[in-house]
Image (cartoon, rainbow, N blue to C red; front, side, top):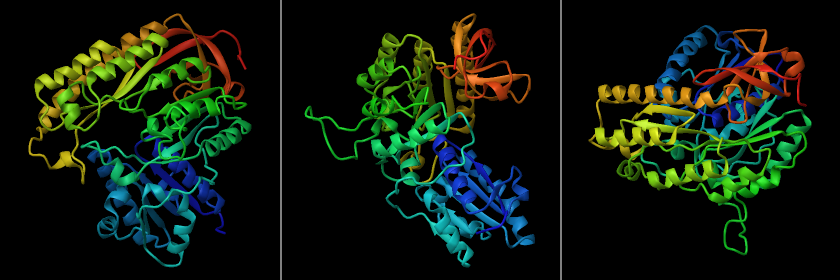
Length: 450
């Protein structure tokens, strides 16, 4: 057992990475480490990395350079790179940064203690081989006391031509419904109020589990899982991400409309509004199908918030094809879109194509789409003005200690006056008085609903 050694984890990228970091932090604390906010004070520094865009990857190397220099002064410093860059680069990382002690892919997050024992025995360790992910028995050090991530499916079997995720996170592996329910029940007992079910492609949940219904469909789907966990005591809200239009079903939408705890928020990336580009991306759907999904959601849940991801500047994208993406956004009216200029990633087909666009074209299109996204978000926010919204209080407003912050069921960040010590984890009715593109301000009508 280590005595009061300190650790620091920096997390880059998606919600899956954040969940992995919480699990690895839990392992370190069981081993006797204490969290420190400052990486330069830590005895163990872990970077949980993202390789979805080149900019995220380069940021990691800049952090690593500082820590590598520090290790020459303090040889007892333990330096770890985990996550997708670790999986992608493997031993190449050791050659580039020989000061590293451990390089570990995302599938190995639960093995951190075993891997560190090898490090402390004097080994430099690379753990990137594909493994079957064992059931999650770790106790995460969760960043929030109110909302929690719960992984339901790891990996991805899709082969989008721009995406590195299947290469670095492995094949799809679903957890069993009972294991997921058991974790959620424990979270409910601990006082957590909101659960976000996570998967790289969450609509694929269950298709690798055995069993089928008499009708011939998979016995375990995301829809079935929502029904399976909906009645858990203490949990007030359930969310899920990230969805894929290829597998998004009307049955799932109807379940979300029917189940009171499931929040009225859908994150469904479309990536492009042009069918030829969607085909080149190997996305497996058309913009018409995507529009039908959104139309069904709005028919059954008119006030639902819709967020998405979009890529501009994909190889070969013409101005007319870019305009098709703009038109899709204008027609649908999104609450939020995460936008990105295409970035060639190692080991992906699109990175090798000879029809790459210039950085100037990509930057121009990104600016244009971002302007539309911001304008549209502002327009969508207007519907909240003077409405009463149910806010789950998560934390204090860091910019104004007299205020607390939380989210609407539709996932809009909301601020209002209150004492975090009294309101954390409470559902509060708030009348919205100010609207902005991506957040709201309001006045509490009563102290708390629950």
